[in-house]
Length: 315
Image: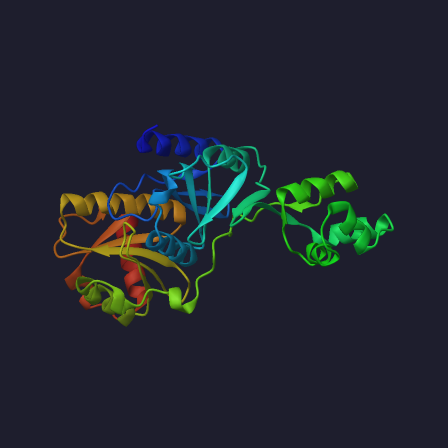
């Protein structure tokens, strides 16, 4: 299956599941392919045939964007270089949850979350330690008795009850022993690793041609989060926590295409979008406001800039 067909299939599945899906981000470089929202859940999705193409830099950028936009980054893929991704299993690459389209259908369409995740050494499940302890005590079993049934040490059983996860084989044996469910779902929504201060992108790491826009946005009162692999240059927010996707360049056909993608993403992410240009022959590209750089020079605060963006977008 071609990557384009795979993206189309995943998009159709999300729409069937009740998600509003953005246009595909067809401009490079790109850290994600589509944004999708259902209710309060906002997803940033990378869709790949071979997930080995998902590198550490892209993973970090997706996690940054997830933090800046209150979204969950995810990768949906078919295989690695060596094997197909197993259905019902969540893999983690560079701090981002990864799973195949069948698992996505179960999760998004059927509402059945995955129970198994891959980690070094094999496949594991989350054991509900409190339930396990209650079941063991209800049977009148000691830690040693359960350990003997499982063929593990008493210390290992104690760790299971303290929250240590178990292999799939042990989990199956436990559920057979106690004739009930002891596992809990893998956290997928919100399952990406949180950013640390070291993970934040410093403005000194960004391109020199972006510095003027960053300085201008900061001067008028926005908190600016630079990006490196998105169809926009920053996610900026004001004191009211209203987010704005921003970019800048000469107004070319490529810039117009980028502004259209920004508009589509903003509608899904519930932000606004603005494209700063040297000269504009129109006021908007769909819902993305076009603002000339000279106009911004005379603006002194975020309220004024936000008002200008809103008026342009709603014109």
